[in-house]
Length: 347
Ligand code: AMP
Ligand code: MG
Image (tube, rainbow, N blue to C red; front, side, top):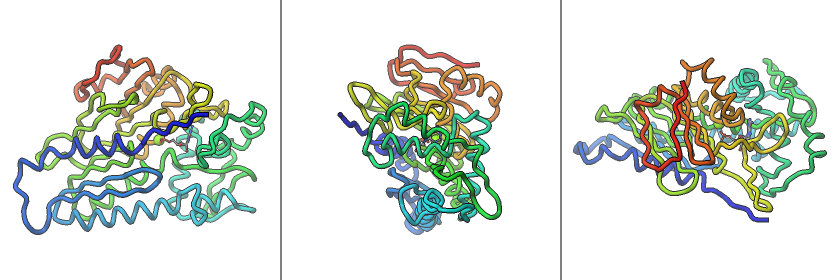
């Protein structure tokens, strides 16, 4: 068996650091207090970078880092002190959890219903069986998958003031929405500290606050799933640009690739011809939920879903055959530098 690990954090961290840096030559740096600060750290299984501008940038970024570690300590599926871990290993329900966990779980359940289960926050028993949390990757037998699938019914989750209740054996994983939630909370915090211009790169989730210091838009790269420099970029202010890609985490067995994004209907890694989905929306949380859900839906359902929600988000679908589809509203702000097989606009 051959395992291949794509370095999830590298491309996006580089993109952020490369694309973001443009303004430093133009304005002389005031001595004290420093007007910009970049903080990089590892959390939530990825590499993160926060760049803020303003007199409080350094202190604000310190607080933002603490906030991320706090959220990680609540949401981790593997740290045995986390609230999600306690929920997943409970002997009786309901399990009382932090209000933030409840807020995020409620949102994920709402999105599960809206996306007809494409986003499923209780797929963890399946994800775990395939080895994605332990890195003991394996292809389970169909009979094993069928036995586990009843434990992934999100309608069996009940959230109330007394906590979260599920059926025995069910397990929650908010990994598909956690970084988007963290991004929104970081931006709230930065704003409360007087920051008006910032960019976050939370391992594939880029979120921007305001525009760049010089008033120009941020340029966010579109990761190349086949390796190498970004295939292009989008220019945005005050937007989240969130990507889910099969290349981010996968294993290969007998020449076949199994990715970390699962179809809850059959309990198997998604195989629908898509390489990556990029969502652009004002909220990082919504964009994160949709990057995963739209990937699971596949092209046709994704287009129908977008047509019903076109005022809420824009999307780019990158196919394995190196062709690309994107929603019409992106046309003025998107640019490609890579030779793609074809470019198609969704309207
Ligand atoms: P993302 O990178 O945001 O697309 O999230 C992918 C992560 O969410 C995976 O590594 C799994 O932990 C989890 N996951 C996989 N498939 C799904 C799904 N259909 N719904 C919700 N979470 C999922
Ligand atoms: Mg996601």
